[in-house]
Every structure is written in C-alpha cells, then in structure tokens.
Amino acid sequence: MDLFPGIEHKIKQGGRVDESEAAWLFENASDEELKGLASIVKHRYHEGGIATYLKMAIVNFTNICVARCDYCAFYKLPHEQGTYTLDEAGLLAKVRYWVEMGCTMIGFNAGFNPKLSLEDYGRLFAKVKEEFPAIQLYEMTVAEFMFYCKKDKLSYLEGAQMMQSFGSKWIPGGGAEVLDENFRDRHSPGKYKVKDYFTAQGDILSTGLRSTATMCIGFDETLTERLNHLRTLRLAQDQWQGAIPSFLCWTYKPYNTRFGGQEISTKEYLRWLAVCRIYLDNIKNIRTSVLTKNEDALIGLDYGANDFDLPTEDEVTVKAGAEISQDFEGVLNAGRKLGYTLIHRLPLV
Image (cartoon, rainbow, N blue to C red; front, side, top):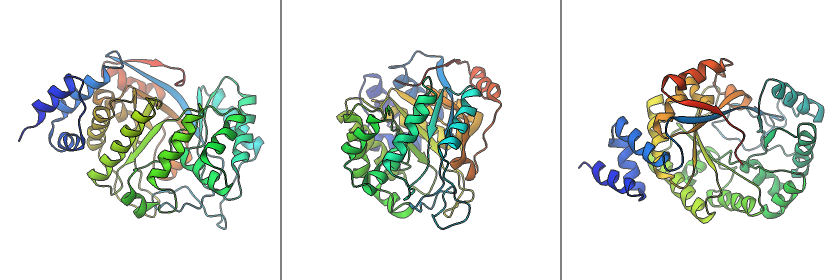
C-alpha cells in the first residue's frame, strides 16, 4: 500500500508523522520523495538554497575512560600503556593552535576518567575561556557530565550549577549514540540508562545552560531502536519547549573497535537524515556530518540538513577510521555545486 500521498498531505498541512509513518518512509519512499518531504519541514525554519557552517576542532584532553563501550577505538583503561591527560598548559596550547588556524568553535570530548572531577573540568574550561574569550566552547558532553556528577556525589542540578559557576555556557548532547535500552545493554551497559540521560539533559537546560542533540547510526541497531531514539528526543524537546537548537547525526566508524562491523552506505545515511528532519519537526537546525562522510555529507543539504561543521581535529573518530580533510574549499565546493549559498556562521546561541 502506498502511504506516501497521505503522509505528504499531513506534512504539507503542518502535521506530524508517527513512528510507523517514519518507518514506512525510510523503507519505501523514493529518494526524491524523502528529499521533498524533508525540504518542506526544513523550509518552515530556513530559506531555501542557503546553508550555514563553521570551522570547529574537537580537543581530546584525556583518553582514560572506564565506560568500556565496544564501539570506541579511542579509550584506554587507567592501567594500560598509552594513557594521557593534558595539563592546563597542554590544553591551552592545543586550543591556541586551532584558534590560530581559524576555528570559531572548540569542542571538548574526553571520557570517564576516574582521576578527574567535575570541578577539574570546570576549572580547565574557565581557564580556556579566560585565555580565549572570543571563542565559543562546547564543553563536556552530557554523558561525561553524568559520570562525574555520580562520581562526585552531586545531583545533576548541582553539577550544572557548578559548571555554570565556572562560566560554562554549553554542555552538548554528545555520547548519545542510539538512545534505546536494548542498544545500550548490548554496547555500553556501564554508561547510562536512557531515562537518566534525558533527566540529566533536562536539569542542564533548567539552569540556563545550553545543550544539543546527537545520534550516531550504523552499528547493529534496528529500525525500531533508531525510531525509539527519535521518539524520546521529540517528546523531550516538546517538554523543554524547543530548548535544543540543533540535532547532529553521524555514522559509526568500525575500524580498530572491539565491535567491528561495516560502515553503512552514504545512501542509507542520507535517507535516515531525511527521516530525522521530517520526524524531528521541533528542532530548527539539522546538521550533516562532514566528520564521518567528508564532502558527501554536503548532499545531506538536499535531505533536510541546513548546517555542518568543517572539522579540523577529533581524535576519537579518527582512531576509528575517520579521515579529516584540510581541503576546506573542496568540501565547500561540494555544497556550492549542489546550488547552495554557504554562509560561515557564528556558533548557535
């Protein structure tokens, strides 16, 4: 049965698709149909033919982590060889390098290092902000924040207030992967429960700190598990009255990981990106992943995305097989050839 006409009519009238309709679209709609529906939803927020980007580095300042996620090629356990934790001088040197290279945002991603505390993070980030006041910082991920709050015996609200006292503005939604309990039990049982993740993010937002939404696909997750992620995120965004400004979806890199596997195709990624735009109708900015798809990610602008990063560094993803190109004009030209005007933007506020 062809459900497309009814779904198209609903979306044109401003209605929402449910999970069964999203599943049907992913499995049955043509690429052109998906692009068309995604564009309808995107154009509620964004002028056609324009996309935005920024240049961003993700700085990793420790590779010690006790979460033991089987899809990660980056972490070392505390007793293993090759561990590191940057001191203040080392961290500032890394940030300085990327600022001089033109980055307008610096993100941080580390792990669950039992030798660090939430206060350690706060003091480090405060020093970075003091040295580089003009640079927007995406600080520790929600997943890291949860670990350190538990370790330090702080409630999430107390932890968020502590980070705010150090001048933090953002705790982005990294570490989400697929927000489904079955997926988490298979791959990262020591990390968090899905309900707890949304509780932490809600408490972060309640203090006035900002956050983002993310998803990583291409492990062994089922379509139902992917849709559970979108369902719980859309519901939370409704409850938070649209506080999350952006959603980024990227793809799992399987190299050098315990789990292994094969990368999913660009075609599958683009089709899922369109479903994300269609279903997550309460999130303004849908971001496509140059980090894991290189210039092919710009095709995602035809599938509902309106924004992307030009990544300059991310050791976590590179360890798993990502290749970061410094040919920024080559990446941008891929979008221009598709007919988009690309505008370098300030970080989201």
